[in-house]
Image 1 (tube, rainbow, N blue to C red):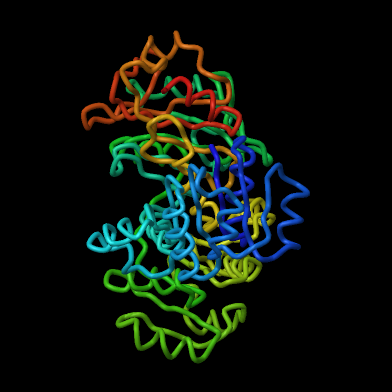
Image 2: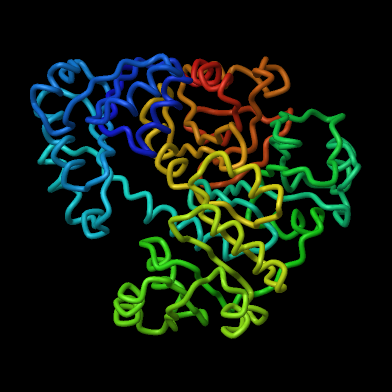
Length: 446
């Protein structure tokens, strides 16, 4: 696939890396020559120094033969203009990054499509949704819903108190008469393992499970996770994400938001009706104590500084807060944040990449998610009448070693996959795949 990425900022460069690793023909446009040189030195792509809103520069990138045009410059107006121009010049599919929620409203979607923007992506909005999802259930590192929550992927840290620790997958499967969940992957010491029956759960493993709403409680019990209701939430950072999370929480939770910038604090206090906005430095332990950090059930750190977010969550944890969420945009800090025990990690680049990635998968795909603490992806693919995947039971099909089938949705019903499961046409299949397995599984669904 020929892909043009307009904008070599954090999102643009991360998406470019993913697309290069997936063997796409990638062209990256930006007016920062030094930034482009760094990308060209490390990745197999073409770069063009120019303006993302210049017709001549877009033409020099042969935009007319582009399969996917991704506009992610720093400014919303540039992003929309770039996507419009690309479409008019012949790009097949255009995606533009925005930061205005009203553009996403259903009544405005057709308007932008008429202009030439096929899809709009708002990473901050998607990040806020992920935070909201993570606060609904404690004891998990990540939660991804498929088909309106009929199948759910949970990333859970396994501790010594878990009943399944030191047991093999085969032994865990024998605990219950009915299969309630699937173990699709384990992240151990920075490496992702696609486990088989003789693999054991170890202390500090980050395990990925596929289950249903009905199987969730048993999974949490087996993983040693005690559930409790969240009522009091403290948010550090009045960013777009922080504001959106507060707006969605304040009707049902007791919310405090700490913002270091006085002018922004005053503005947020006017805009947030039921949130207590405090002007102060969230790195100040005495301030956190004065504002009742020990009484909080959850702490959400979403400042523009990854280091501050990690340290603040560590402070909150030491003060007894049981659920923490940190926005970590520096990819080098992801493993560090995971190892120090921060509950949920949010990364806008990965969120944006997940949204965009599905347009590059050749099989029928309804959902793709790039996992925060793993190089793997989880996909929801739709089987067709001539897919190779339907030719026999899963135990009879030679699935790639870097792929695992978690479950399927058939006629609105969720099924946890076993070796005896046979996929049927129009089934939605939730699959965990390493990067090396993406193209292999595409072929099995085409």
